[in-house]
Length: 104
Image 1 (cartoon, rainbow, N blue to C red):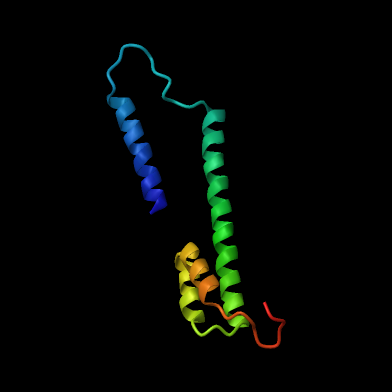
Image 2 (cartoon, rainbow, N blue to C red; image 1 turned 90 degrees about the horizontal axis):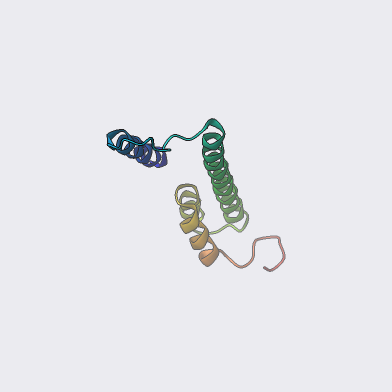
């Protein structure tokens, strides 16, 4: 979905630049270095967000299993699909202690 939205904005930007009727040249094209900087920043941001998503989802799954949470399936699925919601639900509903461990 993100790719579709990102691609559609580029399509509209390119179409509007092509349909613009001006006599003077417009600086709509990015140079190679500028384009690499813009798209490199987007890729790094996406990689960071994917890393955060994976870390939180795996932590929720392991913590729910370790604490023997009664709703570990729900928070695991929410953690993998919508990680902020899964994290909030897990933190609110998790047991305060886990078997064989110190009190939290």
